Every structure is written in structure tokens, then in C-alpha cells.
Length: 246
Image (cartoon, rainbow, N blue to C red; front, side, top):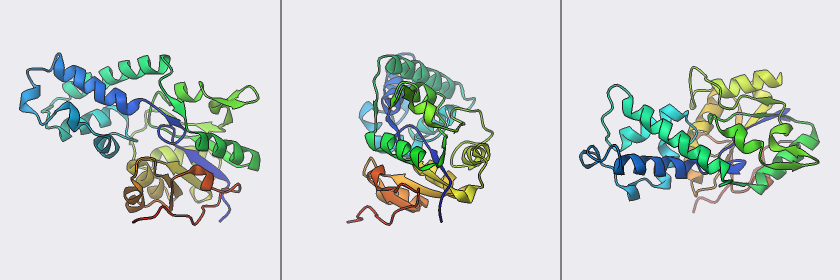
């Protein structure tokens, strides 16, 4: 099928953001500070907050949902949501500090794909659960006086949807704002929850395996898994290249 629209996640797809760092360091600060009496009764240790934990429990989710998932993983009791709220707030404060310091880089293959698809006439949408996504996009040049944010025809990043990923609401909204049916759009994602959301929306999905997680993205339903977004062709058709499974 010839696609007419492409919908992009931001963190991990277009920018190498410090979200993982912020989630990890915010929890460490809490456990070593105001939560220090709570810490011994949990399964938390600083070294236990691995990239695999971030990808499996946080990536792609709205902030509060990510905080709740991490606390549950480490066995932090939080019956009324107080700790999750504190954790989400601490993470947000830290990510804003990191953004202001410019502690992130653009994925060049993501920038190239956006520019190629724009030139080819596809309609583009940004659809990240993160409320900080626009702060990243506006800081990255797309040439000719434009930023990455300027390339998108629709932007639903950081909206307060009733359901977060893996629910398809964010991607269905993006397609609607592009004026396209879901089946004429494909999604570019790096997170399992995002791939699941794309497939639930009835959309094809390119999973970009930046963390050696090709098998996980494939199992989540990615139409194709690549290690570089340069493998997506100009017309937006999904290529047959697959990441080796051996």
C-alpha cells in the first residue's frame, strides 16, 4: 500500500532524550533523600534501574503511568498515589533542567527520514505521550530556518488523552488531524507500548531497535523492525529488511 501519512513518536525515534536519565536519577534522589526510610522495605537499588526496566515499564507511557509502573516494579507501596505523584514531579523538574542544558542529541536517521518524507509529499504528525516533546523538537534544526517542529502538519504531543499507550487513542487522533484514515498512515516507534498502540489503531508500524530490542518490538506487532530509519523508502512504503534474530 502507498501510505499518505507518517506518525512519529519523538523520544528514542527523533531525539536521544535524557528521559531515562531523569527517571533513574529522580528516583535515586528520592530514595536517598525524602524516601530514605522507605527504601529498605522495597526492592530498589540504584543499579537495578536498568535500561531494560526503563524500556519495559516507562518508555512511551504518560508520566504518571510511568511513575506508577516503576514504583510497582520496585515494590513501593503507594495505595493513594502520593509517591507516584511525587516521583512524576521530581522527574519533570529534572528533565526540564536537562533540556535547558541541551543534554540531548538528534538521531540523524530520524531527521533524514522526516525531511525525505516531507519532500515526498507525505503528511506528518508528531505523537508522543511526553509533555516535553515539543521542547526537544523546537530546539533541533531542520535546515532553511526551520526546526523539526515546523515539519509536522499535526502535533498531538503531550495532550491529556483519556487513555495512554498502548491504547490507540493518540495515534487515531493524529490520523484524524492529518485528515487521513488510519490504514493510510504508518507509525514510527521505538517502544513496545507504542508499537502495540499503532497496531491497535489499525496502522502499520516501523519499530526502530535502538537498544537491541528487535525481538521485543517484533513480538509487540511491529510490521517491520529496522536498526536505521534510512531503511524506510521515500514513498513511505515499509521495506522488507529485518533485523537479524541470531
